[in-house]
Length: 462
Image (cartoon, rainbow, N blue to C red; front, side, top):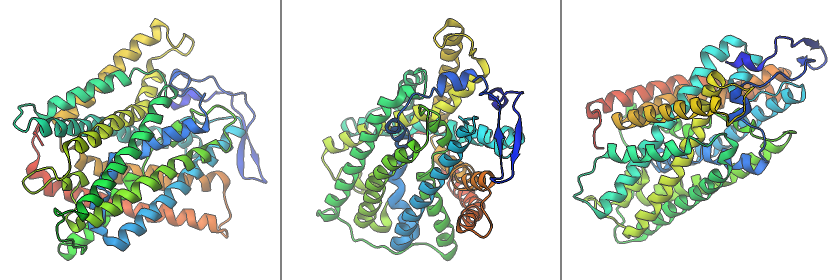
């Protein structure tokens, strides 16, 4: 599919001074996926909306739990370091993309970058499948997280109600089905602007709720020591590192940059600044306030600490209702964003770029295939409510390579910095350390799956 965007008449000549290839051909004709889904009309502000929605998600509610595995010093240090590394990494990707665009061969997809820089095999057999697994896994997780929020709201007002989790997942899947029909990534710009606001709102609610409970009569004795045996603590450290790394993951940076109207130079950096200003506001406030309030009793989701041991709400019902509605709506936007690479593959495979975007020839397969993809994701979410454990494994083997390793490799291979420069060694160090983290984080995730396996049941009402 990636070869469809590359003209067979492209000619490359060596530039001995800069050490990279220059494309003297005219820009190739775009396939239907690039032409219709990754339409390039957006501004840097729209890019900021897309970036924020792709990164800032309900996974931030797990940050206090990651601190229970890392402690105060380790938690704050890694939360800060991961922010710096991912900002640097995403900016490197942007610089590489801008460079190739200036040479006349703008790369619109992650697999386009892999094909041109690493070779067609890497794009077809590694980067493409890896990105698809991460994105479609997120699409499965979206209705699941939304369904749990909807079920929580339902049980607040009907504690003896008979509705099961899978029914709420189906409701969220129906909402996703509607959003999936928006024709292009650019069509989500206003949805993602609202998503940005929602993420700030529910992060604020969680922060205020944690501080309130921490000062209330319901506050429990707080302990900040890392619990467990030496082996548990060791695996816990790597698990905590993986959780925070996944919280900063995107995996679709090239696709987001593809939505920018040319010229693209400098726009992505502005979008990243918008995104990371939201990250600084939300991640640190939720992580620090949650861990301060609940210590090493912080749950896998900090919202679980807002209930007493008898499941009685420690805050007014309207507060829970408001917070969960914000989360529910934001996760629907997140799911729509991660549908875009899947939509693009469908369009590239079954669409006809010579026909109009809204011609019957393209609309019918678009609606059918997107509907089937959402229905399949919803069915898997309902069937596998323990899917977050599996996503932790995907995060280790997928998010870290795409967001921490490949950007460094792409930059070093494109610009060939001297081995005597700091940038070369910083990039190499980040890529090497992240590769080790992939292995250890993967082992820790598999260990967690094994430990939790006894609780796994298909269609269970978790």
